[in-house]
Image (cartoon, rainbow, N blue to C red; front, side, top):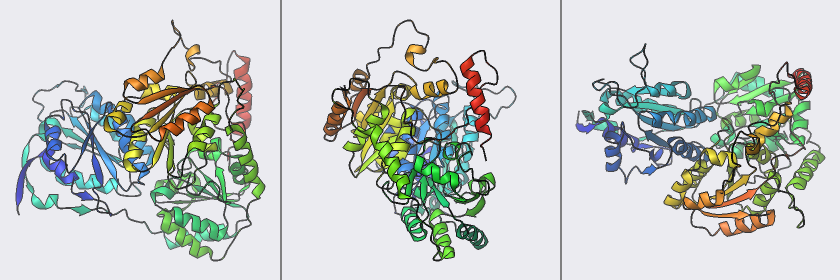
Length: 608
């Protein structure tokens, strides 16, 4: 057996660079890195040697670097991914939030944080977290519950098994998620004689899990007997690259569709069978159909509480639930009749089993009435309207400026709910929402990842001032790398979304808007100056008309273009929506809370 002598870090990077997807591209498109003690000497040297074949990207925060990597994988439907490395202590734990985000959203990313010395010579090393009862624990053990696969590389030869396992998980459609290889810093620098065959190019296929014929037959019988079925489109439609198969199935059988946050854009917004968004932030048209549906067919969805109205939405007493999902865990949720399979081949199997069964189309007035309501709140205000713009009017301005290649993306705050309700997504993956974890701070870094994944797309990042303040440092990275994204910052001076939720549960306005928080001096944050200081072109829009003008100018920008607009924190779209279970205190001195509790107890009775 021929061998080659390399350090463990050199071997790891050489292996990563040799793993391909089915299109012949490296599955990992490179590594995001912030160096520190624990990875600068070993992995830093190895990445430098492979920098042309396996690029290294530098960010400003470990969490946001990981967000960029995750958004990259999401936008490409998990066909490619990226890796992220950090130092051993705070750099590593900074990434735990991002790992949780990837885990919830079933997205591949490789975390390779440095770890303590395997030989324990300098124990405790700088930044080491010591467990008084377990000498094997380090800060990286925080990754265990939020990783699909976790391993600690405490000997060089551990890589011979750990790396193939990592790629198996990242490319497995059912188990896909984050992988953490905690890499002991002394081991990174240790040399070993590696089999040359270990570094041969390998292609990883995303297998299409075939459905069980018995499950297909059972589901098809239930669907065929339905009177008012509905399909809930989830992110799995996109991950399976099944949008065409999905559309074919829907049109062949006439089953109306509602869309989750992750499933939005599976069908064009104006398709007659697309009734729009579902659930808490759903359209009246979609929720009306779901409430009366006798068979609910989930395709690639986790049936999260926002999609189900905390399981109060599908309220027909005799309704049946079918779940087509590649992951058996998701397919069996809430007693669903499972079809455990890839979305694309599962839909094809159900299409064949249903034969020529077609259903009556939904009343077109449902959809027409909904979009009339949506258009009313997104239309531009009158020129003499001096009121602060609403978030809905901002969305309307961005929609009117959008082009066929535009991707709108967001993650947390007011905008996800309003975008889910109001954005008109015309083509697959033109709507990029991280709402599985709803992680504040994902937006700007995620926009970078989306643009890196599809450089020819026009990427518009929607972010509130609260989320911008959480994590904005990668704006400097976008400027440094010449990445053209448009960032629309809606400044409602605080956490407007949670403030409204606080009020709706009877709470007093407290600690959410900046004016309601304890302070000595009023907040005077200048977002335009801040964005410009990091290298972005930045300007303030004083009205919706000025915002539309700025968005036109943004098209010719060569790097990040930031537009800030003040918005009203109180209004939201009254049309549509559904109940969401947010527990209200059973006792309170405040009458508002007692009244909210009474409504809450009444609503609990509607849960299915």
